[in-house]
Image (cartoon, rainbow, N blue to C red):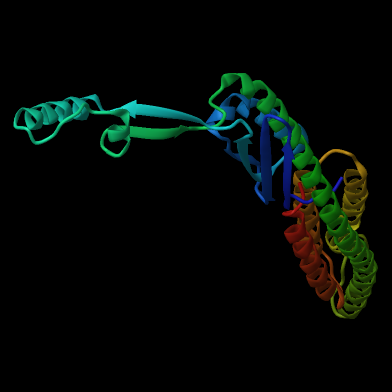
Length: 297
């Protein structure tokens, strides 16, 4: 199956405990390169995240961002600056002894002094009893995001396959035309050799059998029937890989290398006026296919 490596998904889910948001960005990469951003509160599910991704994605650079907002009302921590309080009380005692102030230090007095009390909002979700439910919701949200990503990659893969199928058919047609042109070129070469030998025979005596064998060997050196047959096999293999349910990007990339090798061999062996032009066209299409296959999982 041809599936694109690129895609994007964003899913948000919430329940009574928390709101979970997951974003996934996927781009091309030779192997599976997973980059995770998981809040400390959900660090325990990181191995589960990797396992979920591994079951759905074979290769590509995948960036996953997961955020959590707990619905629990944040708590408050109040700290009293004891050193400041004692220093303040001592100063007030001295002021009373001098008759400068009267009365005792009250809580209201402390509230008016920013140095006396520190009030901090406790992070929501600090209650460990919420974490299991939040972790379960995070797994559910991630799975939904991966499904959305997969659907996008399948759609992109369908467009990719349509282009590759068109180019594969074009290359297959070029190879058949190369085969025809090479046969014509080989026959023309045999004819030229035969005529040249006939001209020379009028001047120099030659062994008829040896001459005939040399003509056959020369023609055999330009025979590309084996390369044509192997290329046709590669085309059939391509279709089988593209139809299979498993990811096939790497296999198609390797197959294109084999196709290109066969075309290069054809170009070095075949003879004929049209062969070179057809070889260049086939290699150009194979290169375009290789570029497209780099996007396939």
